[in-house]
Amino acid sequence: MPGRFLVLEGVDGAGKSSQVERLRHWLPRSGLMPAGARLLVTREPGGTPLGEQLYPILLSRRLTVHSRAELLLFAADRAQHVEAVIRPALNAGHWVVSDRFSGSTVAYQGYGRGCDLDLVHTLEQVATGGLTPDLTLWLDLPPQQARARKSPQGQDRFEGAGLDFAQRVAHGFRQLARERGWRRIPAGEACAAVEAAIQAATRSAFAA
Ligand code: TYD
Image 1 (cartoon, rainbow, N blue to C red):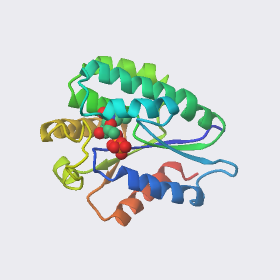
Image 2: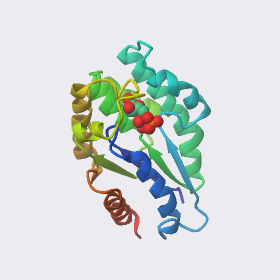
Image 3: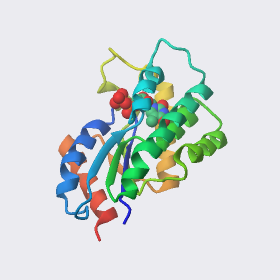
């Protein structure tokens, strides 16, 4: 039986990375995964050796990168990630949790940068080879609140892109959640409450 593919999405500062760590601990003990299935935790950008090389290019504030070039670089990162990491793990019956997936490209490059949405969706098909998550958990936090959690030092190209950009991205996530049936997780609560909401949503999606 193929494994299951879970994705966390949301604006910068929504708390995805710490919730991914909590899932890493909880999911194998949850009783949801069949015997023999392992959990693989990964992320975009950067979940492969190629992605590790692309990561500093994608996030550098010193480089000028045209929005269509940025779109293609994220697509390249994803194609490699799907074929080298995610699909083989799922085919072997393992479960995969990814910190971001193709929804981030629709939100950031489509809604945020203004790349043509038809082009973004076409490229999404190319990059994913048609692979879609079994469950997407959308950590919903207003961009003003999310930004307040991040220090202004060491901001990457997206964190430093301004509140208007962040608001367009947040709007993109809201649209996607509606169109794609994502599970909304209110992310302004205490960490433990967000974790409990994630566990409840995961159980309701996967309990036999
Ligand atoms: P992020 O998950 O914040 O990584 P880290 O925790 O290492 O900073 O992702 C880095 C940035 O990349 C984030 O601002 C969102 C952006 N991004 C896109 O613009 N498009 C994409 O397709 C992906 C996956 C990420």
